[in-house]
Image: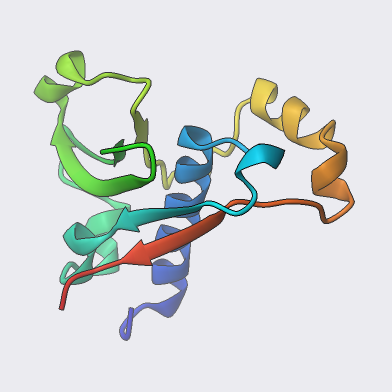
Length: 125
């Protein structure tokens, strides 16, 4: 983050975006906090996160009903992932799909500044 603050913000924004896909907005969950472990990103240069080696992708992996972690996954592991509990982080400029955008735009609580579930990012020292 010190060498590339803009890159660090891109990474954190994508962590938030993909975590929101695993935990969609719900009025009943407004007071809940989700913790995402970002230890895997802590000591890596932003360039390595934004452009992982060929055949690898960063994913958010849901580990419990209130926790997730960021991890680097090889293409060979993709077949065995439970996609209900994983989201691929994408840094190529592509954003939310049409279905998600339509859902977001039609949500009255988002446009009115309504409820939101808290997200906590954690990294070991």
